[in-house]
Image (cartoon, rainbow, N blue to C red; front, side, top):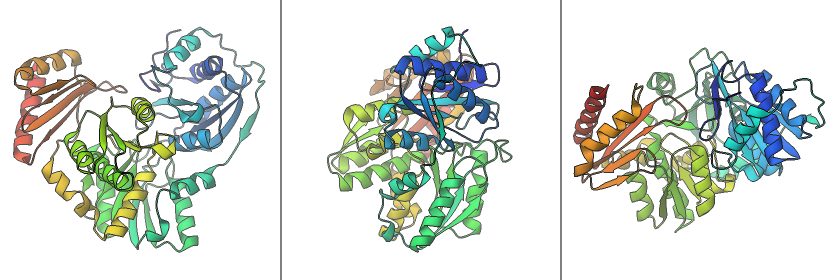
Length: 456
C-alpha cells in the first residue's frame, strides 16, 4: 500500500481513497510501533468523517497496548495542551483544518507536544503504516478513557493576560461552524463569573461538519464579509474568526476591516519584547520587512524559519524563542510548549486595546502604511516549478538578495517577494511587499502575475 496522505508536516487526504478508517488504523498502529508510547491523547474536529477515523486511529493505537485518552470534539491546540499538561507520551488530532469537507487528516505530536514532521518521524511512520497488516478486529490491549481538560486549558490561556485589565469590549466571534464555539462559551461563562466586561456576539457558532456556510477558512476573501458586516452592525471593538480546528485566528478592526496576519505578527512580537527584551522572535520568509524592523527596534533577535507549523515549532525549540508568527495567522508561544494557538492572540490583542485605549486600527495603521503588502495570492498552475524557475530567471540579475529557505525570496531596494509551492495544497503562493509605496507594490505585483500567467 502507498499512502499519499502523508505530507511534509502532517497527514491530509481526500476521502475515502487517500484517507479512510483502514489508513487511520494503520497510522495509529505505526505511531505506536515507532514511538512506543504508553499514553496518547486523541481528539477530533467537527467533520462528519472524524468520529469514524478517530475510532479506527484509537483502535490502531490500542492494538499495540497504548492507553488512549480521548478529549472528544476539540481544536488542535487542545490536543497539544493536553499532551504537555498531562505529560502524555504523544497526541494525535484528527482534522483537515481549512481543507474542503471531503478531506480529513491528522496532526501528530510526541512527548511535550513536540511536532512530528518529515524530519522527525513522520516518514518512518508512513513506511511502517504501509507495511503493517490491517487487523480491524485485533485484541485491544490498551485502555480507552474519555477525559475533559477544558477548565485547565482555559485557566492556562488566561495566564497570558491580566484579566482585570480588560475594559468593556464587544467582540464578534465567528467559529465558522468549526470547533471553536465551546471554548468561547467557556470564556463567556468565566468572564461572567468574574464580572469581566467583555461581550461576545456569536455568528456561525454551532459546530456543523456539513459546513453550511462554507469550509471554515477566513483566509478566503469570500469568507470574511460575514464577520466584517457583523462588526459594523454591532459597533463591535474587534472581530475574530477561526479556521476549522482553530489553530489560526484572524482579526478584524472596529471598522470591520480584515487585518492581515503579517501585521499581527509584528504587533505581538513587539508586545513580547517589551516584557522580554533581547528575546528571539521566529518569522517565516513570505513577508518579512515589517517583522524584522519591529524586532530590531525593540532590541530583539529576528530568526527566519521555513513556513509550516512543524518547521516553525522545531526552530522555536532550537532557538528557545519566546514567540513565533506566520503571516498565515499561525502564532506560536514558548509557554504553550512552543505550539500554535488560535486563542492566545485575540486575548493579547484585547488586552492591548484595553491598556492602550487605542482601537485595533490605530495599533496597526502605521505599520500597514510603512510596509504595504499584497496579501497572499494563490494560483493553481499546471507547471508550478517551471513558473517559479521562469520568475527567478527574470528577476535574479537585479535582485539585491536571493534566499531559498522556502521557495524563492527576492529582495530589491524598494520591494521584495516570495514565491513558493504550498505544502498542503496544489497551489503556488505569492506574497509581495514594498516600503511606503502602495502604488509601486501594485505595479510590481501585477508584473509578476502577468509573467506567471504567460508561463502557462
